[in-house]
Image 1 (tube, rainbow, N blue to C red):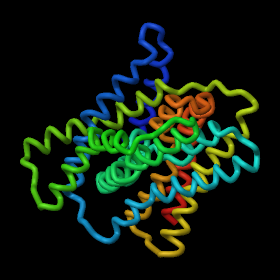
Image 2 (tube, rainbow, N blue to C red):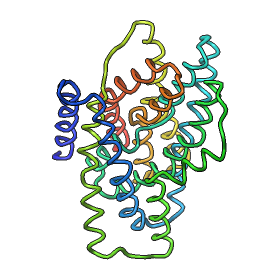
Image 3 (cartoon, rainbow, N blue to C red):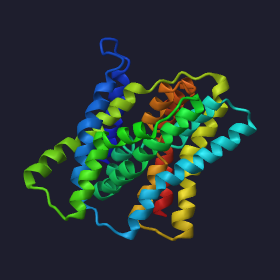
Image 4 (cartoon, rainbow, N blue to C red):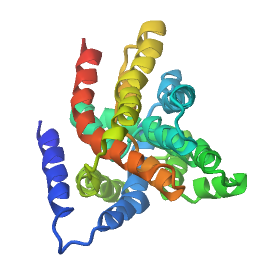
Amino acid sequence: MSNIILIAISLIAGIISGRIKSIPADSYKLLNSILINFCLPAMAILYLPEIKISSQLIFPLISMWIVFFAGAAIFTVTGKIFHLRKGTIGALILTGALCNTAFIGFPMLTALYGEEGLKLGVLIDQGGSFVVLSTFGVIVASVASKEKWSSKKILKDIISYPPFIGFIIGIALNFFNVSLPPMARDVLNRLGSIVSILAMISVGMQLKFDLSRNRIKHIFLGLGYKLIIAPLILYIIFILIFNKRNLASQVSILESAMAPMVMGAILADNYKLDPDLSNAMVAIGIPLSFITIFIWYYILGI
């Protein structure tokens, strides 16, 4: 309960900070930089060596890929049916089909499943969400904006991304069964422990609820998939078909129910793919996801 209260306080603090004129509007970028360059790599190096490699990890690793490709297919088909612009379809894919597995996911998994759930969340985020965003996310953005995309640039972005470097180091330590010294663990743990606070403050500072009436159907379509259909797809596959009622499957499904990825919205903005829609998806999706996450948590606990 204390973790959930901390999440709420941090989010409110971020919302208030975002409306104080003396605080620069883009201050959240500094928090994001600290998270991406220091905290997330530290968590990967700390937790990935402790994960026991088994066939059960297949489901967490493929979960975000399933969510993305299913979402891309659904948004493309419905976009053509409703005659949506290419940029709007691209924005829906980059927000509705990409999950906020880190900034929202890590704090929520810590609160609901503890450290074991967080370890799986790190694996899902680094082995799934980030790689999907950095590869097919960039491709979708380029195609939707009619810009050229380079496989070399995508590869460079992936291998130079600090959390991914942390992911590789963590997997290597796991593979070679290397234990971190106590001092290193303590430093990494302290860096990782502030993720929940900084992430929620950053998210709160970015929340803006400017919404026009003609956006409602687009947002309903995007968030309907993101918060309901995506986790339902994984629930059917993991629980009903393969009968995998374990922590790995539960965490995977709950991660798929997280709000739209902030970085996906930023990517859509950079490529000028309906920025108003992508920002509205994040702004409305984050607070709404706190309700649907607990609904899915209840369903998974039955």
